[in-house]
Amino acid sequence: MKLGRSILTVLLLGIFGIFAFSVSAIAADHEAAATGEVGSAAVVEEHDAAKGHEQGHATVTGHEAAAGHEEGHGGGHAAEGGHGEGGHGHGPNLGEILPLWSCIPFACMLLSIALFPLLAPHFWHHHFGKISAFWAASLSIPFLIAFKWVAVHEILHIVLADYVPFIILLWALFTVSGGIVLKGTLRGTPIVNTVMILIGTVLASWMGTTGAAMLLIRPFLKANDYRKNRTFMVVFFIFLVANIGGSLTPLGDPPLFLGFLHGVSFFWTMKIMPHMLVCAGILLVIYFFLDSYHYKKEGLTSAPAEEGVKEPLRLEGTYNFIFLAGVVGAVLISGIVDWGEINTFGIHRATQDWARDGFLILMGILSLIATSRELREYNEFSWFPILEVAYLFIGIFITMIPCLLILKAGLQGELGFLIAAVKEPMHYFWVTGALSGFLDNAPTYLTFFNTALGAFYPGMSEAQAVPLLMTESSIYLKAISAGAVFFGSFSYIGNAPNFMVRSIAEESGTPMPSFFGYILKYSFVFLLPTFVIVTLIFFL
Image 1 (cartoon, rainbow, N blue to C red):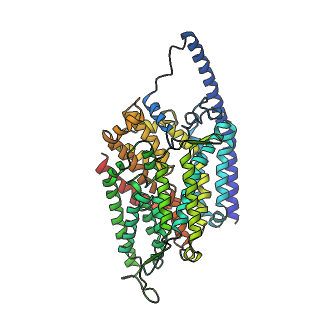
Image 2: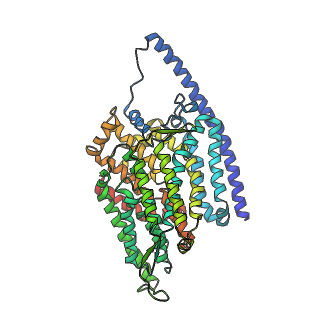
Image 3: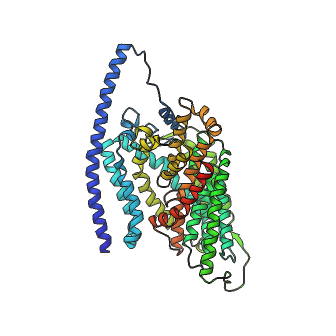
């Protein structure tokens, strides 16, 4: 208890310093940018008066033209008119003036997730929501003071357009899948476990990584409840079912769905099948040998029989598959139809997106009504995993606002040097992937998707450029797509279901590695070599 209080005190003092420094420095940057803009505007006005407005707007460069592609569905936080006072686009682009250290609250949020469970687990378990709110406030307060209504717009945008649909989708899938129960005698041998992960990997592209993960994680854990070492099993489940398996269709993972909304044809992503087969094949083989090793180490030659009569496998609560199909169908339809927009507190969201969110809530409620309490209790269903994800990800989403704005500023942002260095297919794969492992992989995908459009087809409209990117320059789009999806498995926050699977596993009694333990013991050891092989085969 004393340790927890000491850590909290240090954090409070540290954040106070960050807060004070942030307010003064960001405000100074903002004032300087505003002053420069006013001066520039005066010069332009005088020049226009002298020239009789003969000259139009300045020519748009390739990267700037590419940035304009973000104005479609899900076009990013900065692109939606949020760069000026009141969000009307007359002020400076925030991503161009924000310093890299404005990402400190995001780094502190990640460090809290990584260190608190190790240093003060009891304190973390009872106060992780407060810690998440604390870091969110550490970014929001100086951000609001410095940028006022522009900051309000950015925060509202990430909450209404990103966080709310994100958490509603997770809640719906979590609730519906929690009502599907696999009963009978199923013992987790190396072969059975490998087949279950393989099935989940295949399903992930058609019902989404979150849907496949939520459907299979409980039966997978129950089948292996007699095994001593289950940690590596869940980690490989996250690698394959919750991430890599979702690379073949836009339904599989959010970045690919975003590409679909921007003109990438639905079945084009099947071109990533060779990459996925190599990546998944290597990891499945490694998993089988690891599982076989631990199986023998535990002294098991065959799965122990359960007490009583051996029961045949059977599914109960199968009506939840109707609700699950409704969830997947609603997500797909929302990307196809266009019912106009709704302006909510200055945030423009497609009407079909609001309708989708409402329909997902309805599917979850119907599942709760239709499924008996006994079935959910058999599944050891509880609300803690979804609550943990909801509390932590509101902090993650808000604190990563500066990171996303800087990234979306392209060459004009603090990470411009990184984007300028991205030229070859392997660069697109690794840079898109590395950023996707820790940031939201959807806007990361969109940033490098637009970078490629600007680099290869400058000045061309999106409708003309995307078909060419899919054909003439397809290797670059494959690299961006594979990087965004594959590297989502690199950390717990790389993709939506990762943290959820971890929470469900821990609640079932399976010890899981810490944030850094996951990366150092598993991602570095198994994922990096696999991604190197994928690079050597496909992107050199």
